[in-house]
Image (cartoon, rainbow, N blue to C red; front, side):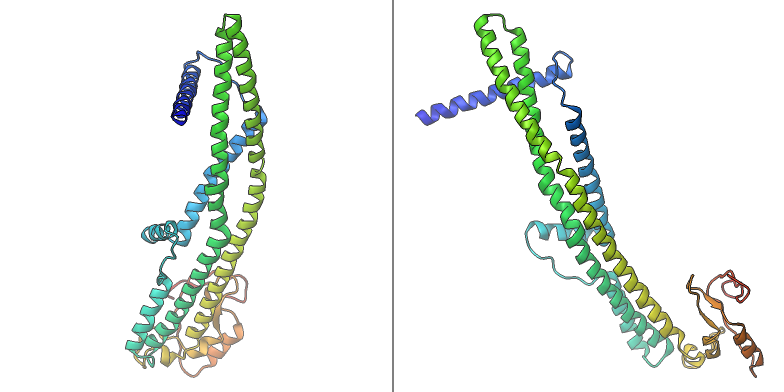
Length: 328
């Protein structure tokens, strides 16, 4: 029975406090009650924390889109994460494209130019797919996880203490209002004591909130280190992909003209093997350009007429090069 009485009294006290806060909040909105303002430093810290939360969420979500463009796959990963289970491994787009190319090249025949090129391209695409998988794993661990931990951990604590500070501030202002309205000496004495208690609780909560908010600077420093890790992961990924494609380009460019014509079937635009030393990748643009005048002399002295098709537009960088247009 005593426990029930205690619960009823506590419920009544909580309801009275809630009602007092609601009245104070409403009167403030209507301009009928004074409001205790937080000091400028605390307001700046609160604003900084809110700004950090908003932009961290945006960066985190867009990074997830960058790493996994498929929204259905992202939802599936989210569900598995909430269930604390590992999502099943799936073939990514480069790996799938690579497998299709390899299968097609095998059916067309590895001995044909097109079939052999498809197999080589497919193998390269699968290597890019592996690099893509490593980028996602590294970025999720070193970049996305710390951002998510801030949103779901540190900021939730800050928001909780901020809400508590708001309630303590409403209690303080409600006590001030009651003191102003008190007329009898006994009522005024009781209101003054209530004001001292609410002021003390408000000051204590403001200090707790301030200490938490000052940790935002450390959060920024931590996120900066995580950002550097993300940049390094991207740098490694793009460097790997560039090297894979460079190696593939060299492999495809090393075929003799009769091989590239797909079993001696003329395509109308044969690429002679003699041009392998005369036409190569530009160091700055990756376009195909004529780089050495002596090779032109070799071509002129050749006993038979030879032709090559320009793949990309190119503006000569100096007098040793030629300006070319695509499909010339």
